Every structure is written in structure tokens, then in C-alpha cells.
Length: 128
Image 1: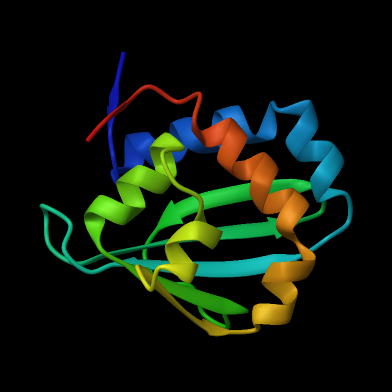
Image 2: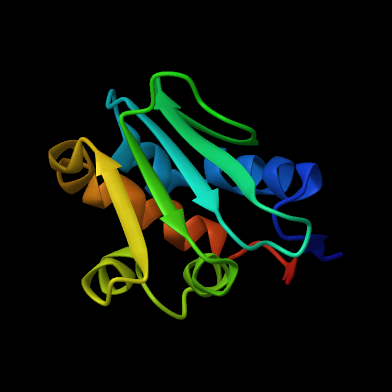
């Protein structure tokens, strides 16, 4: 059954597939990250969600994240395209479709983790 993008059910399903992915767990190791994402024009209004990484587990949730290492701001269409795997965050950044503030070096160092995150998220049945 499909879950609606950027809802609590979506976050729960992403967490389930993420933390059951051997590839993600392997990439995550002992790394840590606090990433906030802002979707400026979601159908339900501006939305903020986050990704926290620590102790070999990932957590996605709705809402703001205190002390984020970085914040990514994007429109809904780009957020959905990234979620579907139609584009990568790197491609969107290079095209100016997303803006990143904060610790870019940390994001670059964690590309393997973020890639494993993207691969796991693509397996979720999502309604956009």
C-alpha cells in the first residue's frame, strides 16, 4: 500500500526500510549526521523533515531539527524526483535546484551513506 509523501506514515516506512537495509547499515557504521530538509512548496504548505544518523541507525521524521549539520532547501517537484530516484541531490545541486547551507564537507564525506539512503528510499511505495 502506498504512503503519501511527506507524512508520518511515509517517515515510518522510510525508517523501516532504511534500518532493515544491510547496505545502509554497512555504509552508516559509526558515522553521525543531522540533516534538515525544507520543501518550500509542498501541497500541504512548506514542510520540514530531517534525517539523523547515529549508532548505525538512521531516523527520518517530520519537523525541524535543532543543531543540524546542514540544511537542504528545495521545491516539492525536486524533492519528489530525488525520492523517486529520477535525479540525485548532486545533480539537483549542480543545476541550482537545491540550496545547501551548513557543513558541506560533512555531506561530501558521507556520500556513501547518503547513496545507501537514496537506494533504500526508492523501494518505498509512495504516492506523490
